Image: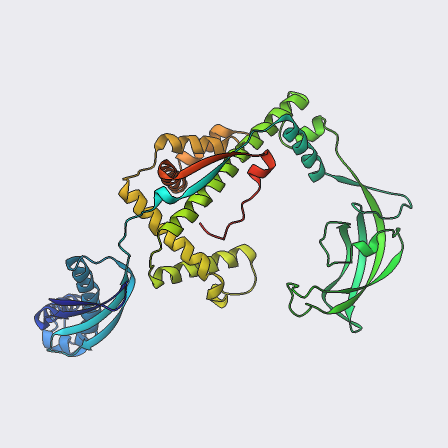
Length: 437
């Protein structure tokens, strides 16, 4: 077998492969012999059909099959011989594909970039430091109460900000009702910003049984492009008005969260535990984001287009699964996901190289610790731990998370790390980062 390789770009390789005709004929004959053992042809007993008849009937199909298999096997042999690491499948272009002649074809493909991760010492990380204080717990209790607000009907009172109204409404554009612009018995909390600007504000002061006409404009960036920027008239009938009532901090309220013992003190203990877990996760996530950004900035590398295309397709599929809709993944524009896909691919290659350079393996003690921390959020933690250890796929996912944490720790050992004391709220506030890993 003859092999020659040409570099057509930083990552693209054009490999010409020649396969001797004798090897092709050997493979064709092997397939014809297999066919002869099972062929059923009128006038001949099974296994007794002359090879000349077998060749006449099946040689073309056997040759096509042999050539396809030989291209696959010889391509693999060639990349091993040339010590290449292909990223994705090759595009194959036959040069000589004739019976009795050597097979010659060209395989064009991309290879994984070869690099060493560098610049760890130049990465700057700001690590937040915070505690969960009593005031933070008090604030969280109020948030939980508001999340479980109940609404009680009022008698004759006008609707105010924060009230829940039961409404019927019909929306029209140029005198014609439009799809999605009408509803009956719809519940709406005034001030929730669920409706377009001016709708909820227009119901302040309305009483049960009152009808109001609201002339409003849809925002220019409204999600439904057919309605964006258009003016509509909404006729709204208020059926009822209900005012918000915050639940008391009592046994009934605690029971909503599965806590039935130790009263308010016990509930505060559980709330604090959850807040501390959220705090740890929030600080860890912010540090990780900074590490990943630092690695990207310090290690600009070329990446195979095929890997980015595969990642784009994965993101398309995830988007369809998450948001639904009667569309196929390939109907979503690829450029919507291009930047995110490239970031994921580059980070994946950098992380894999760091794991290789530092010979990292998942720390099983940390794996156990992470599983127990996740399980602590459930009522029966030990059952959750047991479930993880019986599910190999879930265990591998946790090990991947732990390995990534170990990569972060490796970077932190060499990076410039400064600690900054902040409030609990600032520490858990989601970081503004690009959609990424």
